[in-house]
Image (cartoon, rainbow, N blue to C red; front, side, top):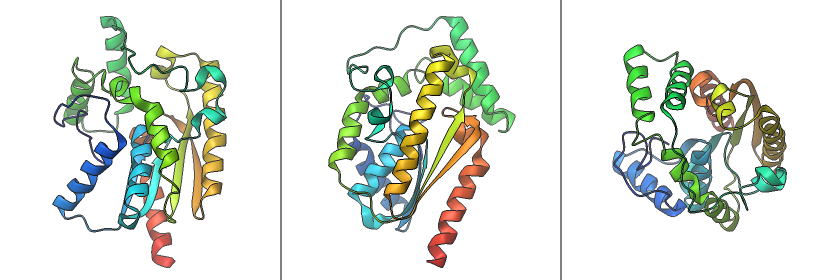
Length: 240
């Protein structure tokens, strides 16, 4: 889906933003670029929720969805109380101040997950995403996660297009910086059940588990799995 405003190298905007703001801008952006519809959207995590919302709003513009560990409106139904968003995600929460040694640790882990990238590109990405301006981006953007889930719930069914869900069942050091392994295992077990149910609920849904990647690293360490999912989806479309 590219980089949303306020993330990566995009222009700064106040975060969080509504699903209609994000998907409306994407729709306009694709039109300006002249990307013909229908299109296959690939979204990771919160980006996966935006891809689903885009499909709800613009069903004729979507040929299929490839969702990488996506946020889904039924998330809390599959999680124990301590891992649910409802009741644990105050809208006015502030990201804690991270000490320099933790930031250095995060830089090292990000560099490791980008090991397959060319060195100059990898250094540029690490510098940008671990900068004081961009480090809190994910935290800020996710503060309205409950509103995002509500939008998906009210938005109605996804269009009848192929939907492939890739989920990561591995755990990385970055996740262990902020949580413990037992909690992460509980979360993975819950999300695996959710994604299996999600895939089964759609006419052309698939769920594939990627064991050698984590939620954070999935698109970076297994781009081959993502590319394969897109290729398989397109091949299926052509044969349909």
